[in-house]
Length: 180
Image (cartoon, rainbow, N blue to C red; front, side):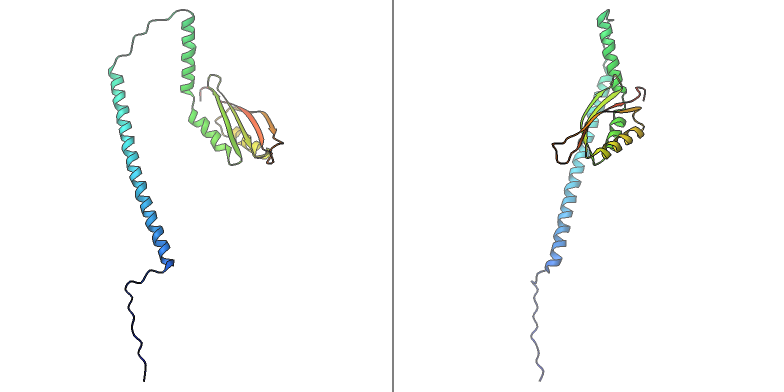
């Protein structure tokens, strides 16, 4: 006689653990995507509001007549002209291209610690730290070959013997042509 085994139907059986983790990961990823989409819509609304305000300000500024200036005489006129020239030089300076060249040349072995622009002179003083002398020289060569600066000078450098990593601290002077 053959023995018949009883059937067990378990409708409440849980999913195996190796299938649960990907399902939870997928659910978390979908929730994150939804949150990012909501944030993107909020940013788009904010950008549209800011653009609308800027357009309203431009319209208001163009509607009001410019104030009449009275001519200034003597030393005050020279000082005002000098200040206006400095402002023009700063506005005409291609900051995005100049700073982009520095960022592109720096790399992971160079840390920039200070930037001091002197737009009236067409000069930028730069201070930083390189992992070693080879990294500093490579950074210097990339800056010289980048085309954004007409002259790049290494003013000083020294190795910090107190630091176990012995980084090379440096200061540079970068010059650009004022018309660029």
